[in-house]
Image 1 (cartoon, helix red, strand yellow):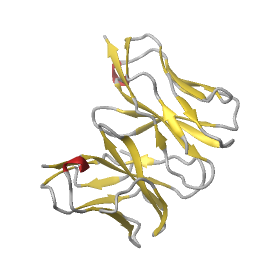
Image 2 (image 1 turned 30 degrees about the vertical axis):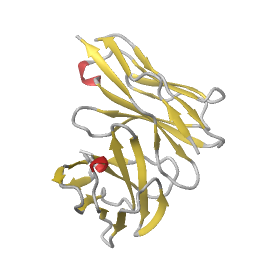
Image 3 (image 1 turned 180 degrees about the vertical axis):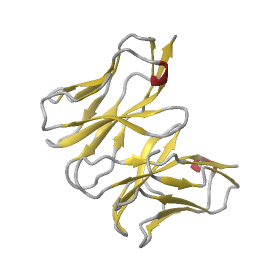
Image 4 (image 1 turned 60 degrees about the vertical axis):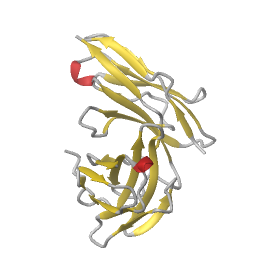
Amino acid sequence: DSGVTQTPKHLITATGQRVTLRCSPRSGDLSVYWYQQSLDQGLQFLIQYYNGEERAKGNILERFSAQQFPDLHSELNLSSLELGDSALYFCASSVGEVPGTEAFFGQGTRLTVV
Amino acid sequence: AQTVTQSQPEMSVQEAETVTLSCTYDTSESDYYLFWYKQPPSRQMILVIRQEAYKQQNATENRFSVNFQKAAKSFSLKISDSQLGDAAMYFCAYRSAEGAQKLVFGQGTRLTINP
């Protein structure tokens, strides 16, 4: 158990819908990262938050947004869903912005858009 | 931008034998970190081993070791005495020492262990 909790584990929804994925980082970790794992794109970095503030953005679509709350949990919002958004979405957390510190991954949320 | 390449989509090895997974990367940075992550069927991403680019000594964790060739931008993973539980997808990943702390992943190598 990495200590990073993601809910839900599985999500099936229809095209055009909006969903929210939730992540609780390890106790004491201030940084949260979101990654998307799809068959054709592999593992792609989406966005990073540190202590409530956005720190870095990757190839995140405009239909996607995220935030980190004062209690440090994070949510990834996916809207106007398309079939191609079906993927495994990972959250990871690390202590802070110290280079090289290990990122611990949650078990992921499997999103299926039908 | 940094890129990571794993040229072996699939590998297989007999139980108790040794296998080496390849990884190359491209970067203009001099300081960075390299990682190998394991993803078993449970989907959990598990850190296997980490290498700091400024260290010349290759990292070792029990049966797992790396061959880090900085000039060649190569970072291979050697698994000794392979066990059935080693069967998984293995991802090589790069992280800058400065700026964004994101991980840049390779496409992965699926490792099968034959009993």
